[in-house]
Length: 227
Picture (cartoon, rainbow, N blue to C red):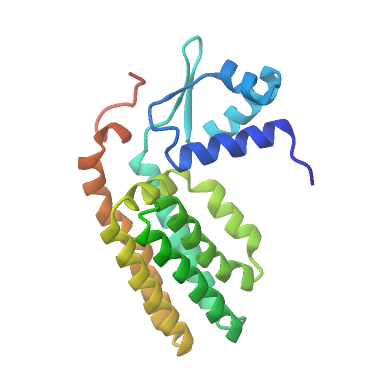
């Protein structure tokens, strides 16, 4: 199905926000976006409204539009949301797992290793997501995976930010390999435990990220204001 102008703008801006090419607090010019896509202001406005609803931008009448700073309360909510869903999906996966899935999972781990060696966080992120999507695809829950992708923008930004550390990438790979080994042995209880530990680790990395990039995060104690 062909994308509308609004959908194309939404996808492009969202990718730039998620992968931090548009940084938290950075201004977005609606007129520049309109000019870039050669469209009227209407589809630009529609795309921006969708991004605002997802907590990825803030809009101020007569002032403009900015990429939102990362809201830690939303990160916690989105982490809980993804963890709850993915634990259930891994448990359900026991009914759908095929031997060929292990080969596919190992392929994406190989891509992760290449990305880690190249210090390419975006390539790593994509290979990581592609690996996790296998569980949703196999259990016929692709729409749920799409929902996770749509509703976890703050969580995803923290993930990509954390992947600037090679140590984090190597730990992710090790956890993925443990998960695949548990699945190979059909130990689904262990797989759920490992997945829980894997997805929960971001909470412990966030404090370090705040120290390294305080300008990217919404102040915990004060109401957020655009500077």
